[in-house]
Image (cartoon, rainbow, N blue to C red; front, side):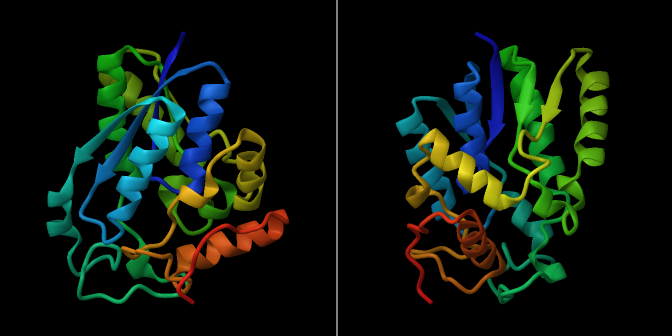
Length: 215
């Protein structure tokens, strides 16, 4: 069985990616990152879902990154307010690049040839580290750095978030356990940009949203 590493945040996109990879016959090794984010609950949800799916799971402590993200992103800085729409302060600079670098090291040690993450077409306009040009360039660097044929892919890169919700339903993903909110819970705030995207995706997919929102 071919091994793969899935970068797993605990949100519907990455969780659906993990379920898809298992259905495809991979031995899935999920990796979740603590980068000092406000939404600590996403780490807990990731662990719970991996246990349900029966896949290996590691949580990597990168919480010291919060020191370089202070004053830069509201997802980490406790003094910054999280906005309801897309604004620069919700971007975590080069986050996927940092995660991919660690995932490549993990995959190399495991003997895994594939790394999957949950980027989709709706992310590409706003987030440069979700674009195919970026992750394929990173793939090239990973191959040069390991001298191994590692492949980095976003299986749902060509479809919108609503398409991922549809795929999640088909795969039996426990969508009610996934976490999207930029804040720490216990419920989704229902106001931040990520909550708004989540709501919109369920609506566009014509799937009943099981999420409990504060507003």
